[in-house]
Image 1 (tube, helix red, strand yellow):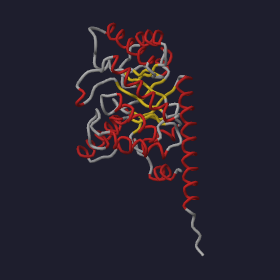
Image 2 (cartoon, one colour; image 1 turned 180 degrees about the horizontal axis):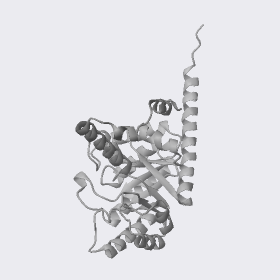
Image 3 (cartoon, helix red, strand yellow; image 1 turned 90 degrees about the vertical axis):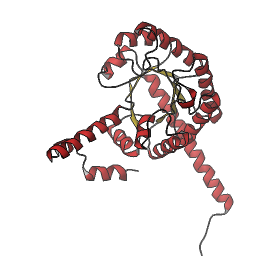
Image 4 (cartoon, one colour; image 1 turned 135 degrees about the vertical axis):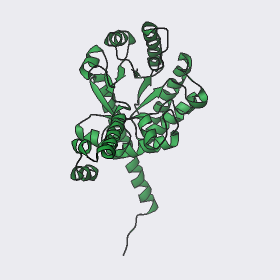
Amino acid sequence: MLHTQEPQEQHQHQQSDKSDEREAQRHRALEFAALNRRGGLLLANVWDLGSARLFEQQGFAALGTSSAAIAYSHGLGDAERLGRDAMMAQIAALASALRLPLNADIESGYGPSPEAVALSTAAAIRAGAVGVNLEDRRHGEAGQGQYTIAEQCRRLEAARAAAERSGLPLWINARIDSVLLAEGQDSDERLALTLARGRAYLAAGADMVFVPGLLDLGQIRALATQLGGPLNLMAMPGAPSAGELFEAGAQRVSLGLCPMLSVMGLLRDLGREVLQTGRWQVMGERFYGFGEAEALFDAP
């Protein structure tokens, strides 16, 4: 005779599974917060399960998504063109397949209002993320440039409130785009603007401040000394080494979009060589074996 679970038993089993998942996510959140506070954290940013598994295999302690890389992999440009639902679906697919803590790049929150940011934060938590990056740059209908400090603080407060309602100790990384947008008359004014925003964002509920594009070690030291909270920087071609960035005061160094751009550069060079010479030296130099690939995706 075939025995099946009663509806009540199935419900209890499902509730138990959800409880276990929440507890595992909470554990990863606490682990991720500890990694950021300890400092010296190198964060690889990924866009699909292949890139995530490869970085996981190399021994990274945590991973983050790159919104731009995910958008490119879907055939779209950066800056919220992919949309919240599709982005969250990719974040969920990555979080469910990884053992490592996952930080979610939620761009500018998929809407200008604090309510939109709260929705995106809650969605990232449901997707399995234990940290988020939130930009202070306007996208799409919200216009151009940065939100005012007051506007961005309200948006960060909404993100923090959403995290508290979920019960997850979410690590909120407040991205400042003053350097990327070349705000201010010169680098000194730009640094002052960045510092003012960073202090305000930390007071509004952010755990860390992220300043992509800041590469000058002297300015990094000045910012880290005066900020009053952890600093995240981004690696890119021409940047100081990780050791130099950490010595200057960074707690975390992210790879950002650069890994995907490097892969795109490799594919360009490979295709060019094949078409122009009929040879495959570039492919051979960077070849990843079939057996290795099969083993990578056979991993639980």
